[in-house]
Length: 219
Ligand SMILES: [Fe+2]
Ligand SMILES: [Fe+2]
Image (cartoon, rainbow, N blue to C red; front, side, top):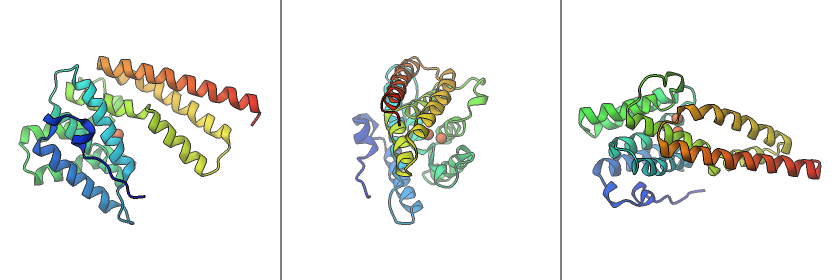
């Protein structure tokens, strides 16, 4: 399925974000993702996730004093390494992003800040280190999408497509919830943490209802 995705700028709905860097990065990331699919399609999973994290970051950025261009550029690029590997994709994303940013001749200081955000975005055990506000927003936005309805629904659909027992999906959801609970300690922005807690409550109630219906109908 080929889908039409609006530009990052349209998604964010902020005219000020029409910075040349973001626009350039957006078209490169799209082209790059096109290339990675053998059938010539966009790898929508990564691209859409990146756009959603940018949307979350946009909300956090309204409350925090941080460099928008660094945060949004890093989020656009943070998972491109997943097109190659799932293991240490942070390092692969960092390397790919470095190549891209070097070609675009981005200012050295900005480039290294964007790259650091990418490199640290999933380094949770190292998070005792003090992150800069930009690095923290990238981390929070990424975690927020993990607990999003879209991510959870996609997860359920992928299981259902393989015709897996409904109880297996429930077990998967419980595991996901447990994983999500552990992530809470890494959210440090107020907006990010508040939203995360709300989303966690919603997910708990969805799982409890899921359980109730399974018991009711004895699957
Ligand atoms: Fe990632
Ligand atoms: Fe991500």
